[in-house]
Length: 203
Image 1 (tube, rainbow, N blue to C red):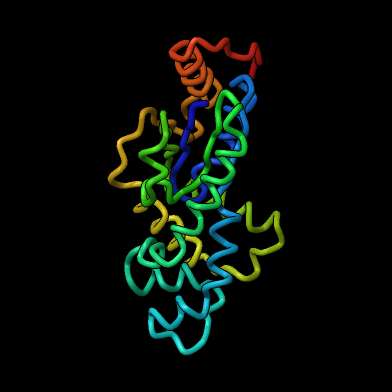
Image 2: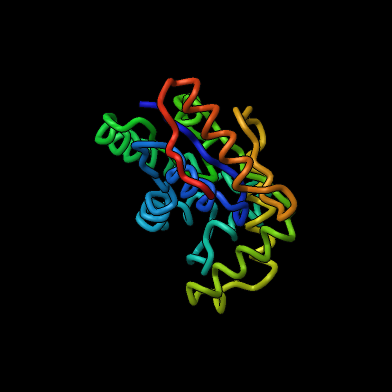
């Protein structure tokens, strides 16, 4: 089993990349870690508020903390061990697969990053990320809860999370470079290196 970590800022297109890789790599499964993060953020909201001296919980707790403390990972110590534990449980449960593709913006901030056999940074223009994130919030019916300043704050803060990592590959999801070509090449390289035939999927 090979572990592939996909990371990048909000709106970068991580979910799109992981889903395409899932199509390209034979016997693969995707693990999205955002649901685990949201679960523990909700469970530990009171602890996080107390940690940052908040008397009541803001509507967007993590964005509020990031905006007022200048860092989007200052709260991660509170939840990252729980998220990582759940991720490892999932990985062990699917260890008979050829590939497990992990999708998480905060991957570089955990030990999971060093456990990955391959890491892929998804990057692009901040304005494009902003537009994608805003469209995603609108599609989910949540845009009314988000002012533009918080969306931009989320994009800016999540971009900072990706600093410090040394990815195996970088994907430019900027509407200028072909996402299909980039991912097909990466999938072929990974499959060839591990002597596992790649799916004959045409994107």
